[in-house]
Figure 1 (cartoon, rainbow, N blue to C red):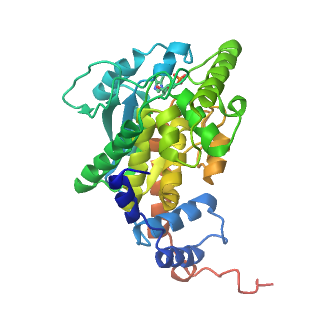
Figure 2 (figure 1 turned 45 degrees about the horizontal axis):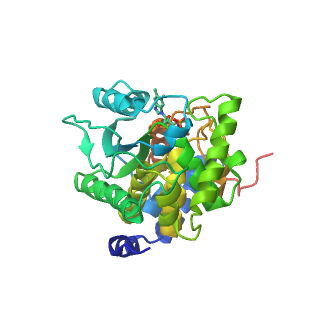
Length: 357
Ligand SMILES: Cc1cc2ncn([C@H]3O[C@H](COP(=O)(O)O)[C@@H](O)[C@H]3O)c2cc1C
Ligand SMILES: O=C(O)c1cccnc1
């Protein structure tokens, strides 16, 4: 990494608070259920304690950051939808009508939409304009962007999180919009996890068999042509990534540096998580997996991240939808530790005592 900002910034990211995590584990062990019976919710409660240093945390101020950008590789016909859907959906987000808006309202989360690289001029009083360039270049013909632009995208995500933390936000959800973005996400996954494109690549918005085959060949071509240095996440991002993927990498790093949980949405967000972890391994400890997307490759990607998703709803849309839905699991984990009775307080016999004949 050559950026001195990033190099300095990631030094702030340190691991979980082991003492708080241990205390939460001990507390959960006393709750009125058989040991371990609350499954992943217990693990989540322990993680949240380790993240915040509090046994009974709560997350009132939640934000889903939707990074929006376009992709030059769309010229190869890798998406079932045209590129103009990216700005059209941005206006939909800003007027509250998209799937993520509905689910965010249910979860009481604020939706923030960022133009980090949309290929057209868009303006709206509520749109955060941080355009780095008008879409990436076509990675099937050369690098998607320069190293400087890749670094700038990460820095943009970090700065947005820093501003949000100043406003009191204490949990983040990753979201994105960018027609074509399952293609660079699959390419990033291939590079970072040494996976074959035919395994990592899915249908995105709904490609048929023939177009899926073509998408796989475009990703193979892009990887062969650009030869991303797999030991250098910024090089991978610059050569075969996307501006929103970089922005989300920054959101994850920013959340980790501020000791906030960051709920990882679907396939695109998980590709960003791979990059964040490669830049700062301890950032992984702040990630909460939301759902297993229906997109091919996502389960394998989550496995590579060592993340276990809480939800499995066959969703394949991104935007942050799975992430905001999973806030209910975060709330559940928080409520269990703060509201449940213990064996002692409820006067219930623990498993250590012999059963009455
Ligand atoms: C109407 C509409 C709304 C969306 N919301 C998220 N995506 C999702 O689909 C796109 C990725 O799929 P692909 O790589 O196949 O283009 C991204 O924009 C992603 O956010 C949408 C896509 C569409 C068409
Ligand atoms: O899992 C996702 O994030 C996803 C899947 C398909 C299309 N867009 C997003």
